[in-house]
Length: 391
Image (cartoon, rainbow, N blue to C red; front, top):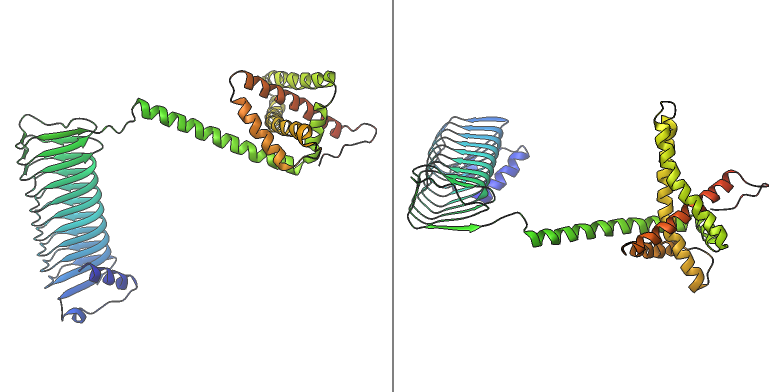
């Protein structure tokens, strides 16, 4: 039946209408499709329908299957129901099984067979004569069931007379209405105990499994370490990529910064003093300029340049470390892209060392800032017509 139904839906979607007598040799069937479909004539066998809105008002002697945005069943079905829709409303007796996938599933009359439903909101005010299997965010069984019940969902509400076992896996809350009777066993798993009034009866006992979906202390610490590790990995990876790009694209600039680290101690101290002074004085100057309306635009521009200088200082601190290592141990003066990657990786690892690592990283940043400012100043204001080639 399901294969015939799938084939019919494919043909209907292509705009092909099959005559009913083509299947008359096997099972009397009727096929219909429209944007708004009203099935007002009874079907002697199976019926198949598709449309944005499907309404069944005549009895069906066989199975009824439908695909649509909204499906309303207002007439009895002697066979099984199979539905796929956004909204499903069953208002008549179903003498077979009821199977549905939808957003909102509302069942008002009884079902002689099994009830299988997948949806967001499932409400059953009828009574199923067979097994009940529901997966939904919110489930309500308002009139019990004759067979075993299995429900997976968030919030589950039960009412009526249940003749067999009831199993509930809930991530939210399970509640029983007053005078609810479960003649089998109630087994449920939820974060909190179920709300069971005194008038409710469970004849074969209750089995409760506490399932807290909030992590415990140990799991929280593990998640915390994983989050910190992921953040550090992402930060280090981004810094490695940026350092490799700048070292590969502007090797002369990296060599010029490294040359200043090979200068006399007095020159190195002056370079670090310049970088430290800029790091400290620029925020104060930006704050003073922002106090006046005229200096607000200049303060914004100064802040952008300051942020750019801090970023370049961090990256070139790693590049500087890689250049110094290569010059000392590889005896190579030219800067390659992997020198920047290696230096930035070493700087990232050094910065992880408490106190001492942070001090070393800050000193390298201060020196890099002073060296970059000197280089940019000489490029902007060349002396005696001489401009260093930095690219």
